[in-house]
Length: 433
Image (cartoon, helix red, strand yellow):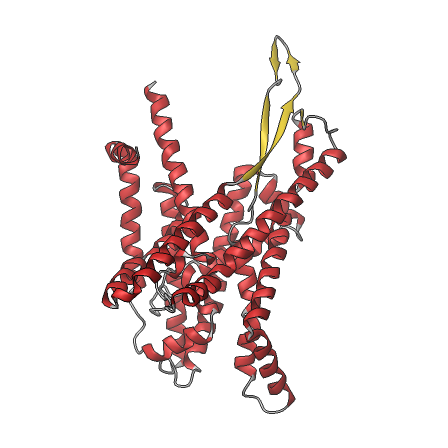
């Protein structure tokens, strides 16, 4: 069945061109991600990544370009940060809220333009911070730069971030799927071939069972992530019949879908950013003599405890699921829009009663989604330990298959792209009919 669909996709000229265009952009992205900045100490860079786990998260959004310190080392992080900041501002600034929620497609285009503009200063700030951090390591990861060289390096990495943003928008416009998500997806799976080669290079017959157990658990986790990503609670909606002139409108029934995980991967990103702050603070202030240095060291050691770290991480993910959903989904607006269009939930009065009903259902659904997302976030820390406890071997490769940010992004992108390809195929079937 799937083979026939693949053949059908490549038989359609327009769809084939879109897919080949996306693959061409992927090649450009991977070439740029492997052009490093001169004068890098690879061993110092590896130690830095082990010290600051936040760099691992940034490396995901740069598609592996940060671990190579390439000219696109910032990746799509500045653009994603800009969009998140603007979405949060919709809760504070009414003009942004009207632009994003009420002005339709034109408002969305203006909102996206503000996101592009905000990307440039954010990329410059992030580039300067990253270069400064790399130069202040002991020993330095890159050689100390002069003022002119620093300015040139900041302009280079900023241009790289803007160029990747442009490539993502090209994919969205001329290809298929969401361009930004696809570029992040390409960066995550780029490590898959090297992981396979590493597995065969370190192959040992005694590791057959650990790898078998790892891939079985990975398949179960992937199936669970797909289930959580696709699961939704459908609320029935009916529309009253209305007569206009000689025609009758309405009288139909549909449903309002509430996703179990409407916030996607954003809560994990927010939670990671906060959880990594104590460690970074302790690293910067730990060398200071006196009470400040001692407090910073004790604070960092407290959060290094795996149980403390896991509990706080889990709680923050749950909290941010509710917070981000409150930003993006407003039951009051939904109820008002339904009432304006003559829609209602059967058995529930329009207006305030509908708001209370939608809020109650949303909170119940979010509890399941938040707990599931918190568990998925902790799985990369749990699964290797479980396998090591059972088999005595620790699997260090294919980490993106067992949960966390990477797996959520990969699953979401694959499902979204498949839906768009299926929609294109169905559209052409209707045209033929």
